[in-house]
Length: 291
View 1 (tube, rainbow, N blue to C red):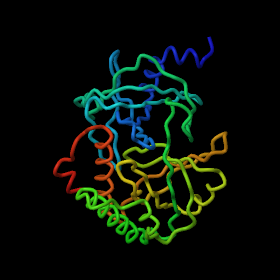
View 2 (cartoon, rainbow, N blue to C red):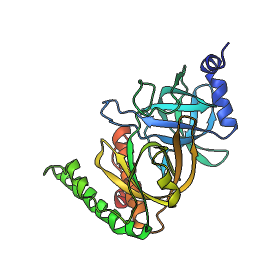
View 3 (spheres, rainbow, N blue to C red):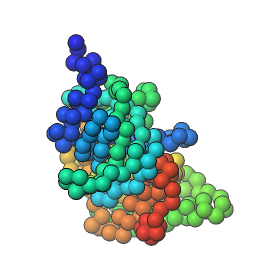
């Protein structure tokens, strides 16, 4: 029997192997309305599993977990070697800490998996992630990102205030007035995944050299359809590697050391984004203060 077919039919064994080596799954929440334009993918660790459910670490951003209610639709995927599989599932709620003391998000154990492209840069099928585009700029002076991020925050807060009052929404055109930091030429990337520590990007080999010259980058992260204006964040390059297809995969860590106030604002927005697509409802009082 071919190895790929064997792994498709014996997917539970593959999931057990991922758990044993401390591996991860990638999750994208799928609103029932089907209005999500792009899939923001969260990278989570597989903590434990049984015959009925998978327990994964809580999706997070910048070191903080995000609240997810039971009953949210999820597209999950995992990789074994150079191959990738995906499956639809639902959240079953948060499980109490066990073993390592970390609470987990329960997912319904799938009845089967489907082999899919390792990285879906464009929508190939319902089994593939539709990855969002990200604009990045290598920072020549990280401190110059502080006023740029403050201007971006004011722009977003104006949009949210207008949306709440029904006065009229700020359009995407506003982003053309984006205040830029002291940075190099922009590069285009696909947002592969988000984890509590940072983001993974896919970048063409022709644009990748700009990353090697500077440690810090300034990213415009999309949170559509919740927010039409990308939120900006400073990141530090952690690693890069060239794949066989010529794509450069780059890992970046969040860095709020130059602008600590930005962390609470960005985390608050991501929490609201997750709530908007999972039906988690409004934020807690502390979340509103952070946002």
